[in-house]
Amino acid sequence: MSEHTMKSLTVKVDALENMIKGFEERVKVLEEKLEGASLRDRGPSSTRKMTDEDARRIIITDLKDVGHKKAAEALGLSYGQIYSARGGYTFKNIHEELAKIKKESK
Image (cartoon, rainbow, N blue to C red; front, side, top):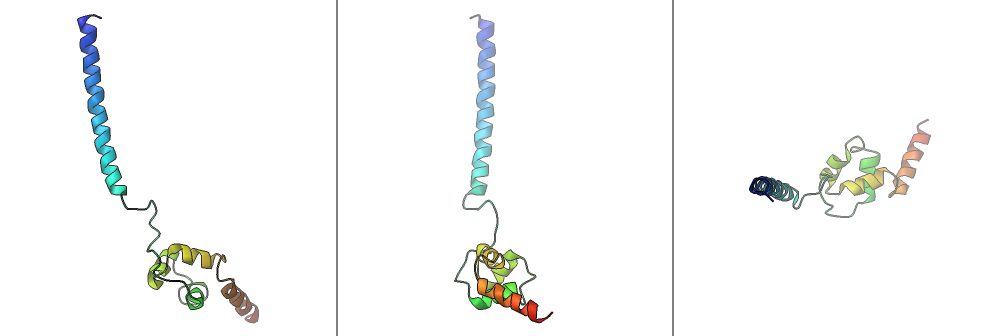
């Protein structure tokens, strides 16, 4: 190889090394931001089991129009517990109560 070619290769390698160092720094910053954080903020973790009364509140009464996350925060429950109850995956008995209430009000 000629000296000119070797010199240009050295310049390119140096540039690539600098680029890699920049990427490594960016990855480190991003990893620090993500450390301990979930990708979605679904609100608090559950502090207890959901009760029938909680389910009534979020499906039928005062918390029925509140978002899942806000309802979870208000009751010390998780987003998933609220979602499952409202979706009818759990507390089917409360959904049956609601259906009965709607039927009687007609």
